Length: 116
Image: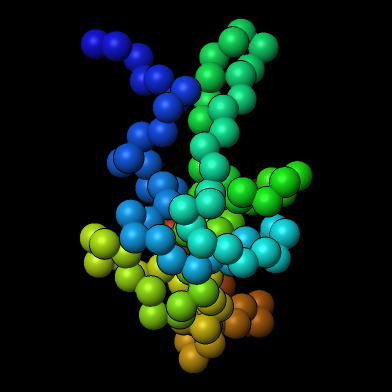
């Protein structure tokens, strides 16, 4: 079996730009542009091993990956596979009441706090 070649993009990469161009926004540089302008960049480590990634096409921007740092402008966007993308994840949790530890109750066995 041949090792993966990061010199060329993998169409199964989860951060690959959408097949149908869409207007996107980069959270690093703030630019808006069509997704087909995202770039495949390859960097090599000290051993010469290539690592490629999709990134923002704006010069000197370090935003990477569709659905990571680069998001569709349309809040109801679904890609060609029917996967919903949104960068507004905080709204999903606004109505959830999380328990508050006021220190009055002992922890339930197995729920000890992990010190990290």
